[in-house]
Picture 1 (cartoon, rainbow, N blue to C red):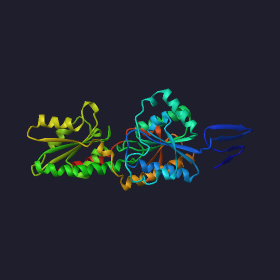
Picture 2 (cartoon, helix red, strand yellow):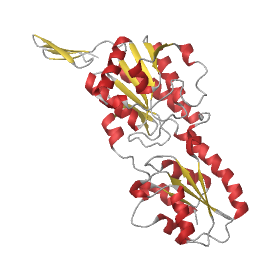
Picture 3 (cartoon, helix red, strand yellow):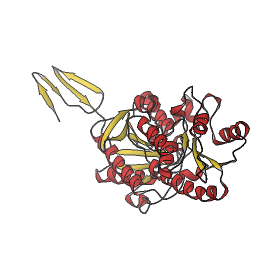
Length: 355
């Protein structure tokens, strides 16, 4: 909305300003076309986000360009017109219809220059990027180098982006892990073994910690709880109750400090505590697949619509998140550079309930 103060009359659209006899006007190039891409690891709910972005943009009179295979596809000009029909029947599908790829080319200036030329060639005025830490870092770089409005959506099963309570795909992955561990417990009970189950999360333990609580596991070994106290020794020290038929330990895939990973702890257990029998299950890419849960579909839909609203409001270089069920704008530099803390209460809950 215009605001008037004395002889200064300011209309805020973007960055460029013109001053005429005390009249200061901020002018923004009018957005008519947006591009949307998914980058990095896929996450259930990405299609719901693409659908929401596409339909919200069209609802507001904008054109939409779908960019295939992330930053690599943008460099190679893999860009197509998107309509409402392009995203019809996709909200229940896992993966990403835009596909995704890692891009070494985007890491250098020549690659990013080519990407920007393709944006201009297709008349793309603003960019919406769906992905995790690396994807949003890429958005931050191209936005700063070429002054193009970029808005990010948190799409990662790791739930490790600062400033949002949850990310697209996290809930589905958590439910997938829960289903798998429930099945593992059936066989663990039959053989009186300790199972180490490795889950994704990179250097964040949200999946391992919450999956451990949800499945009634005996312990979770996570990077956020790395202290001078050996987590394996703590687990053994609490005592594997003789009344229990089995024990299950959720382990983050993190390799911080040269340790981590389920196989590492299973090998240690067998070597240091030979009275126990251990088995390892690495869930791997199973965690990324599957039909997105209702929570992920709703979250992705809310964030997709909010991304368009953010662009309409002149926002740029922000990630759209949710805090206390409210939409928030998180600057890229905070979302990708600040470590998201895990709730210490969750660690205590698991410790109390695993006796």
